[in-house]
Figure 1 (cartoon, one colour):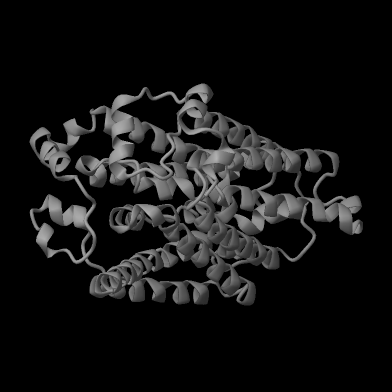
Figure 2 (cartoon, rainbow, N blue to C red; figure 1 turned 90 degrees about the vertical axis):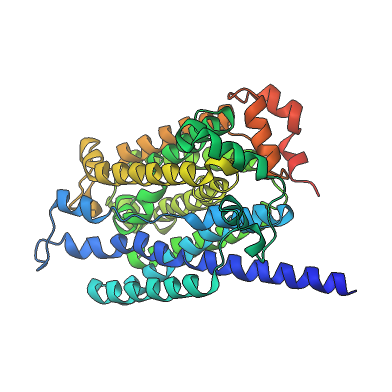
Length: 420
């Protein structure tokens, strides 16, 4: 009886610590979503703080690193890891929704929204400093494994010792290090250039480009709600479903939505009287955008960050995780920086999105989503129901390319991955 109580207390302690780590990402989400509600005002020709297209593209490149994903993967039990590693992404989605709501109520006061958004990081930084202990793997790497009150990941001592002897940079050349480095960086590349974060940063403009007839700020809130709810659903689904089938479903869904939106805009040009006077017709782009957000949430928006804490071995986890995070935000910077120019190159108008035709940019994101799906099919390794040591061993022993035949032979069908 006493042993059961101790385990319950340990589990509650673990969940409380993980919650603190995840809540710290809400501030990151608020910074990610801020440009969406500020840029429409800043791009107005009569705005006292007017930005041109080039300046506006620099305004939307906020950065935030996600060490919470790595931390949570290190301190969580294997049975709950699939759910818990998604909590930082849920925190980001919650932050995006909060800033979208503030933008809807304070449309013409982006400075006040910025001030309110700046207060939250201070609170989360204090809570992290006071309440968050170091992870067992970090303590172990420093020879302080007795200091931890959390469950230590079993069996990393030999790997950490080998890493110290080999050196961190040379350790990146080991198969169990460079293979996940290639896979995750490729996943993040396609995450950014398939348009997921472009929709977050330029939500209001994207809604106008898509020809949605509802108030654009109300629609941003709706998109934020859908993304948050979908993220919570994914959190529970990942306790039963594999990463590969969810990523493939996400990629296919994103491809269909972007291609569908492009075809719609080609047949019914944005701003046309047919779209504005027909409620059913004008609901099509809204439905496709909402479906795109859901499709992204079940895979490409959430899973790369979740797998960041799962795929790297202990000897290079900090360095490889830092490199991947850095590259992910460089990809994000590039995708967001080129968006206005890509839009204009493909026939849109970054200054007057409500009156322009922009099917070209949606075709671009649709094709990129299709390539992203192919990348996942070929290279993404399944981590569901595997310990961190098992994942490391697979990268060490198996080839990088994951053919469909090999995957089905090893893991069974997608339905089997989602059974109890």
